[in-house]
Figure: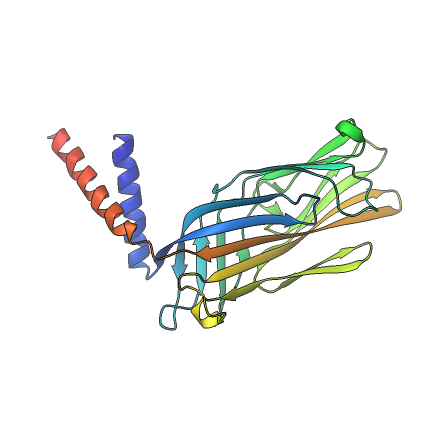
Length: 259
């Protein structure tokens, strides 16, 4: 099958499946931020199409599916915490697909979104001594999923550990050498009401606590990271009607060529 025909049919199938499931397709802009990992913080923004299930007049968000691969983030940062032994953090990541569901028509969502990639943790200038630690492992644990990933540093028995969790629109808290650090998630519509989140200009902020820890013997030094994913719904994508029409025309052309 011609690649253009295959792409058009796949897009049309997505439209039909979403419609049959009572879901809407909404264009959105997403910003991924690893706050606290260093200065400047790794940030990336991409645009995609989400599958949204709602109720309450079509304005609540009860579940949300967003595609992966919208953005690749590559960043070199200096740790913001002066107590860490890290001299530099080099991040390379491409957020995966997210699946979120939540509660009682209030706009509260929770779920998983893995973050394939890794952070190179440097202990000496110019990264002469460094260790690469994956953000997620085997798609089963890590940042955005939950669970622990550990890598040896090469400094005796020293290890670097990443502790991940799932995403939520509630408050995320992670411990640091100076005490707990928090970030607020939220869900609200253009009028800052949770009952209108799915309207144009509605915003969801999902957050997840991440901790990068260095341990050597009895010494354990945490670096708190609070990752956020902000989803902003863009004006209703009427261009989907054109996409569906175009997919039908391409399919018809392919059928005629085969005759």
